[in-house]
Length: 135
Image (cartoon, rainbow, N blue to C red):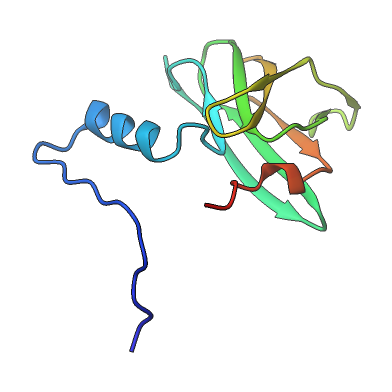
């Protein structure tokens, strides 16, 4: 028998759509794991990401599959010191960051500039500060 639910919240969307889902996710997780601060749909492609944690490091793969340059800020939950790892030339360098306090705790904003059809890794060693606070 599954464990009993002690608390929680549920949302019902009578007319599901992009705006409704975004509103629910913003309410449920005000400081999302990764928040891209511009529309990710671009001419001829998208700006997308994958986030994985391995060996205590948080690794974000950011990809611009579009025909347009991406120049935006990406918010990451936690107070992080990420580095850019360029898979095209192997170079590693610092990222331009801004640490702020979000609705649930620290957030790191990272400026990301990607040429068309390019990608990069953002690697941060401090995954402890990314955890959601206990209720």
